[in-house]
Image (tube, rainbow, N blue to C red; front, side, top):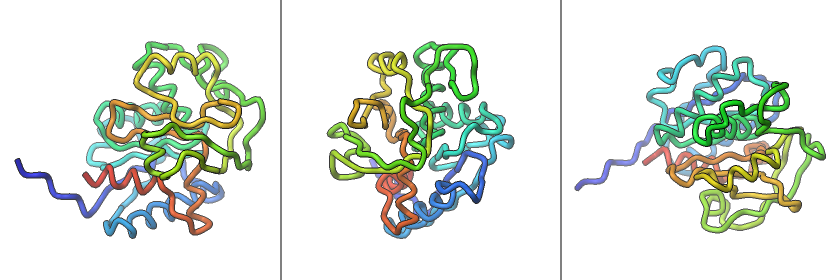
Length: 235
């Protein structure tokens, strides 16, 4: 049986409401362009504003999906559509900060059966998957320990990293316990044992991080998870 040839042009969907003042949004194109240059391929990316994403059909044809930071989103349902489409169709997926949070809520609702899964920033009722952090991580940098032999550990090539954040919300203790029973595994923790990264072990590449690793591109550094996502999308 012949192997499919590697793709030399990729289409990336950046799902989120672009804002030139958001640091992560400034960094994302740089991170993708750098990774594409190293991998010697072309990566075309479309910013898809959340009000424009109303159906899974809007994502057909993309080789990878990145659910980007800066939530609350104008249309929260679009974030859930993006995460679910990538999860169910084996499309390489990256979720950072708000993207990480909403991917976990989608998983809670549609895989674990938490129909009332909620986000404390925008919801007043339901079971909180995402809750306020004990200490704010807005413009903070912190160490993260990675689980060995995972997508994220392989991407970084080491088991301890240091990355930056811009968030006030993280995984609730109640949901952290629920994660132990499914295929979404915790793959990164801070020094206190709080969840900072997850990945779906039944998927070729589905990774979420609370930290905004893309910011490294603004300092001229390679962004390992973006390289990994493009390699997965390439085939």
